[in-house]
Each structure stands twice: as C-alpha cells, then as structure tokens.
Amino acid sequence: MRPPWIEFPKIPAGSIGWRMGDGEGYYNCFYKWFSALDTAAQAQYQAANPAPRGWSRFYQTIVDHPWRT
Image (cartoon, rainbow, N blue to C red):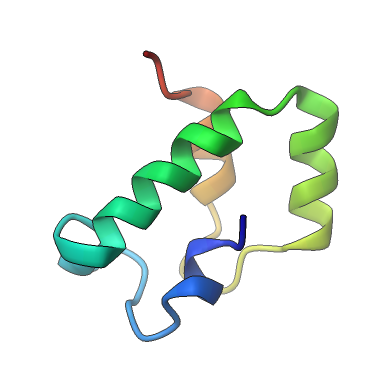
C-alpha cells in the first residue's frame, strides 16, 4: 500500500479528513495492513517510505498500538 500522505496528499496530518470520508477508509486499511507486517517488513517499508514533516510519529504509533481484530 502507498502511505496515506502519498495516497491523499491534500489531507494534512491530524486533519479530520482522516476520520471521515475517503481518508478514513484508507487510513484504517493502511493501519490494519501495516500492523500485520512483521518487524523486519515494517522497518523495510519505513526506510523506503519515510514519513514527511508532520507525520513523524505515524509509524511508531502503529507499532505501539497495532490494529487488533
């Protein structure tokens, strides 16, 4: 999956756009998907897709609070 900031570049970090509409659906799918990766795959993905300014804790938040089904 593409990082949320690439998929929806006009929705800034922390925006309500991630909690409503298209942004919400994509964000939740990404969160579930990234949570399911093993530690090595998460690290590889992060290295290939560094978080931009404003998203600095994004990956760590998922690691600290993975999606539980």
